[in-house]
Image 1 (tube, rainbow, N blue to C red):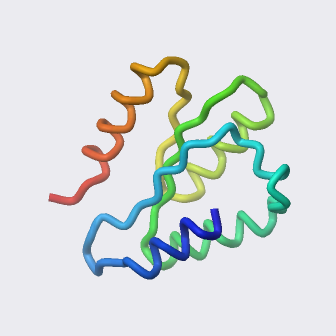
Image 2: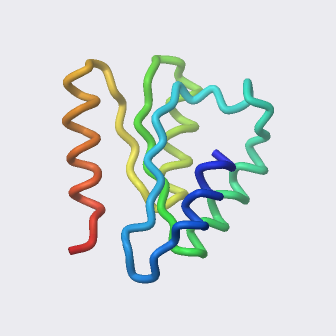
Length: 101
């Protein structure tokens, strides 16, 4: 997630559609990421105008709750993906709904 925010910051467009769409199983702690560090990263992104939306895969209750919490905190959306068709439809819909015209 740190790299996603670095890329978003380096490509930031004032008044543009500055968003991260993260597809994950929600196993953030397995990557050595502490929840407090991720909270600070997400809050910093919001202050800078970068939103975070999450496409969640899997069925672990804690991971699903964490993904939803992070998406809300990041001024984005959370979508649970159950099928391949879900992933394609949700991704296109998410980009359309958050794009500035």
